[in-house]
Image (cartoon, rainbow, N blue to C red; front, side, top):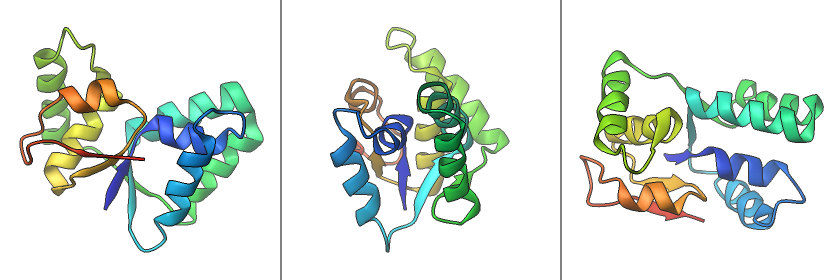
Length: 137
C-alpha cells in the first residue's frame, strides 16, 4: 500500500497545478498497488478541491473513494494518540493533524511509501517503523 497526501490528490485533480502531470501519472501508475488515504487527508483534499475547483471536481474525487479506487483509512484511538504525540514532538515544524495522521497510519500499517509533495514535513519526521519514508513522486 502507498499512502497519499493532499498535495498529490489536489495536484492530480487540478490541470493547472505545476505538478499535475507528476501527480496524475503517479496515481495512474498505481493500478496494482492499493492506494490509502487517511480520513483527515480525505477531508482536507475534498475541501481544497471544492474551494478551488468546484463541487463537480470534489464529487469526482469522492466518487473515487466510493468506487474503491482509493481506500479511505479511519484512524484508531491509538492513531489519534500518536497524532497528538507527533504534533507535540514536532512543534517547531508545525506538523498538523493531516500530516501527523499520515505518519500514524503508516506506522500502524507498516507502510513506507508516501505520495506527497510535502518534502518539508515528511523528510524531517522520523517514523517509528522505518528510518525514513520513501517519498513519491
